[in-house]
Length: 272
Length: 322
Image (cartoon, rainbow over the protein chains, first blue to last red):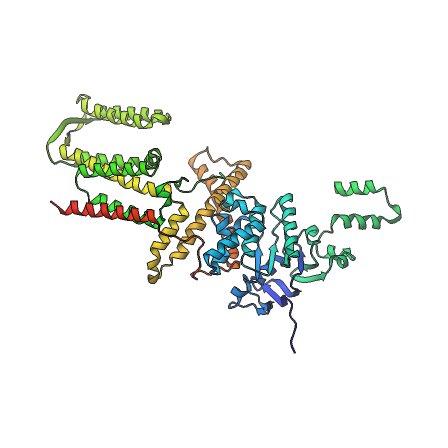
C-alpha cells in the first residue's frame, strides 16, 4: 500500500541534550506543501530545537523526519537542506558574507552553482526582497530587517520549497517586523511552505494552522478559529491570548455586571 | 564605530587597483627580493626613485604611503643608529670623546623628563625627538668631565657606517612602500582570495586553502560587529560603575576582565549560531565550492609581470657582474 506523505512529516520525534530532560517528547507533525504553520510555545517549550532538528542541525534521540519523501539522516541532511531553509533569530549571526552579494551567494557557492547563474540569481532575488540597491553594502551598513531579508534571498536562491522562520522577527523593531511579516505573506501566496516559530500570538494568527508546544510535546494542533474557542488552553500552555480576545473574554466573564467598556479597557491598559 | 575600515585599503581607481591580487602579491615579493639583491647606494637610490615614480604613475598619494611608514619609524631609527655606531670601516669622519658620569647622566635624565612632558604636543613629535637626541649628544660630549666619572669613550663615526646606514634605510623604505602599495590598493578579501589561490598547490600537502580563506573573510566580516558589541558592553559596565580609564592598574585589569568575559561568552554564542547558519545553508568544510568572485589576469597584469621580470633579471645581472 502506498502511503501518501505530506511535504514535511514528523513522527514520534524526541530529543534530549543531556539524556536527563527530554526537550522534545514524541512530537508528531505534518505540514502540507504550500501550507503556513505557526509553532507557538512558551520559553523552553522546544520550538527552536524542533526547527534545528528538521534541518538536521540536531540529531533526534528517537523518531523520523521526512521531507518531500527524503528521510532525514546524516547522509541525507545535505539533500534535505536543499528543500528546507532556515532564517534564524539573530540577524547578525547568520550573515556570512562580507557584502550583501557575497551573503546571497554563500548557499549557492556551497551547491556549486556556476558563476554566471549565481550572478543572475543574486540580481533576481535581491530585487525580489527589495535590496537590489544594496548589493555591495557591508552588513554593518544594514538594519536588522534588511539583514533578515538578505537571509531570505540567500535561501530562495537555493531554490528551497520551505522556509523555517525561527523567531526571525523577535529582534526587529515594530516597523521592520511588520514589513517582514508582509513579505512572508507574499512568499506564502507564491506557494512557499512556511513554518514560523514564534511566541508572538498576533504573528501566529497569520498562519493557516497553529501548533502549540508545551514542555516539548504537542499540546494543540488546530486552526486559530478552533483554538480560540477554548481560551483556557492558552493559559495552560503559558501563552497569552491576542489582546482583542482577551478583552472579549474579560467582558464576557464580567457578565451582567458589565461596567462601561471604557473602564474595562482602562483597566487592561493600566494592568490592574 | 559603524564605518570602521579594516586594514589599510583605500577605495580608488588606477593601475594598481585593476591588477589581479595574485599578480600584486607575486610582483611585490619578487621586487622585494630584487631590492635586497642591490649592492650599492646608487642602485638603491635609483630603485627608490623608480618606486616613487611608479606610485605617482599609479596615482597613489605618497602622503598615505608615508603614513603607512609611521609605525615602522622606530625600526628605521634603530637600524640607522645600529649601522652608524657599530660599523667601523673606511675613513674616520668623527671622533668625539664622551663623558658618561653622574652629572651628565642626571642632565640627560632631566631633558628626558622634559621631552616626555612636552610629548603631548603631538604635532612636533618628530622635531622634539630629534631635539632630545641632539641634547643627549651635546650633554655627553660637552659637559666637563667633573665629578665621579664612570667612563670616557670615543664616539666615532666612520665613512662606511654612514654609507651602509643610508643604504639599509633606503632599502627598508622601498620594501615597506611596496607592501604598503599592496595593502592600500587591495581589499582584505581580495588579498585573502589571492593568497588562497596561490596556496592552492599546498592542498596536496593537506593544507586546505579554501577553508583558510573563508576563515579570514569571516573574521574580517565580524570585526566591526564585535567592536560594536565591545562598545555596548563598555557602556553597560560603565552604567554599573565600571571606569575603564582611571584607577590603579589592578582596578583597570579588573575592569577589562568585566569587558572580556561577556565578550568571550557572546563571541562563543555567535560562532555557534554562525556555524548553524552556515551548515543549514549546506556548507560542508573541505567540499569544493564555486566562487562568485573569480580572479582573472588581464593586460595590466601582463605589463606588471613583464616589468617585474625585467627588474628582477636586472637586479641579478647587477649582482653577478663585477
